[in-house]
Amino acid sequence: MAFGHFGNPLGHFFDPVLFTAELLFTVAAVIFCFAIYYKTRESYELTKYEGIKYFRDAFLFFGLSYVTRFLFSLLLLSRVAFDIILLQNIFVPLFILPLGYFSTIAISYLIFSLIWKRYKNKYLIVFGHGVAVLLPLVSFLTRSHAILLVLQSLLLVTAVILALLMHKEGKKVTQVRILYFLVLALWLINLWMIGPRRLFTVKISSQVISLIVFVTLYQKIAKWVK
Amino acid sequence: MNNKKRDRLEVIFDIFKIIRDHHNSIKPTPLLRYSNLSSSSFSDYCAELRAKGFIKDIADDKGRKYITLTDKGFKYLEKYKLILGLIDEFEL
Image 1 (tube, helix red, strand yellow):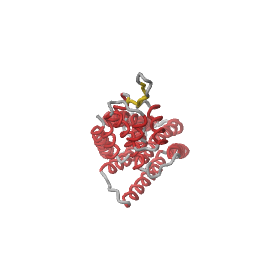
Image 2: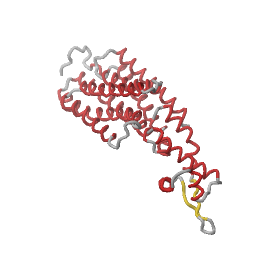
Image 3: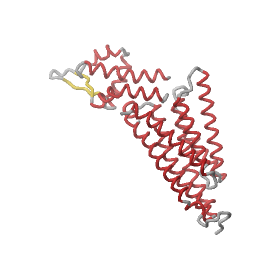
Image 4: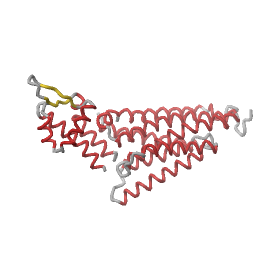
């Protein structure tokens, strides 16, 4: 075993503060994501409205993404602690697939919930799943979650361009659209912060802001779903 | 597209409201008239709403057919405004 430059042979894996913060953040984020999904169930069941479907499915997949992200972060941290080549070559690439799929489909669905009326197309879902398979596959083949991050950032840029196009047509930049942007941007930041050698304060700040965004979204939904 | 979809939710709301306002039982012909739909659209809506369990057919002693709301139909009426609020607020 090589412990690198970490003084503690157990590395960051057993850093109780980092581990607890990561765990608490994941639990809270997943609870709010699934709560949003659950709260909107009746509205969707009654109407089968496509926009509600994309919206709630986005949060279902964000919940799954955050669970996978947590497991992935444990894996990365254990790699730092124990320096096992197998982890890097087999388990990390394998984790990229579900992580990339869940998060890409979540991002796609959140974008679809805004644009489905304009670009109504029966192939929209097929396209979303295609992108969600392709992105992690590229990341898997390159053995790098940073590639996934770059590709998902391109999705975010696409979403911003679409929002700007809609803005040009007279639609205001609403609070909800800013919240959507924050959900997507913070996912990318949290994905970037998954590594063990990140600034603790930045990591915690992005997690706290993420939770504030999820709570705000939940409160807005709770207003309409009694 | 938004309006078309919104219209769909509105049309369903209007159909349910008409049924409810007629003591929850109305014959198909007046319902068609009050709902301002074409005959084929009306048939499509009724078939869909029947299949999804929002409305059901009942018959009186003389075998005359009426359309009535189920609990799910009443639930839709009750939640309609809130669902529209959700759709508007989140730009869905």
